[in-house]
Image 1: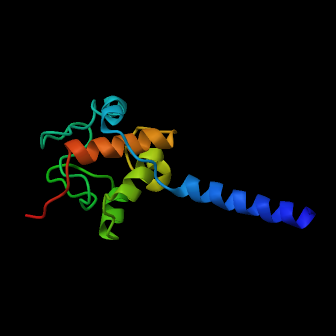
Image 2: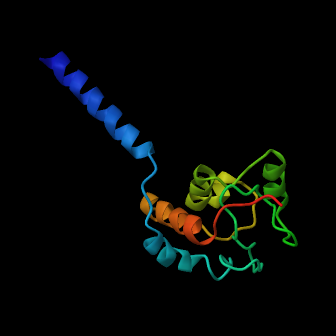
Image 3: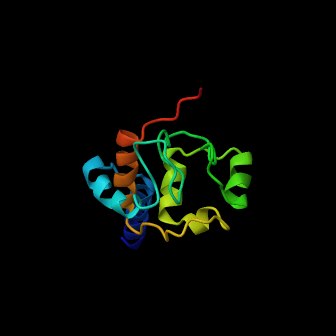
Length: 134
């Protein structure tokens, strides 16, 4: 009986761990509200840089690829390593920019809630769109 409880506990732990690593489904409408924290520094619909680079075409865009924006050395180095802003990398960046790329200049501390991150990514996918090579 004890062995059965141990096996059941391990199975439950595995299911919970798997569920925790799966990315939540995002809601673009909620993501737009969360993006209010970002819009002082980032433009999402126009190719206009502010304190941060514009985010038009951010999905699957190579990092540090916006013309005319002065990126940190840390971000340029990651770009040279081949960093692309796919959903997984954006999620890590939005959670903690300083942990994801130490030495970058982004002042934003990050989003704590996984759902908010998923919502912002859904909003970016809807509004900013995918990168298109010229």
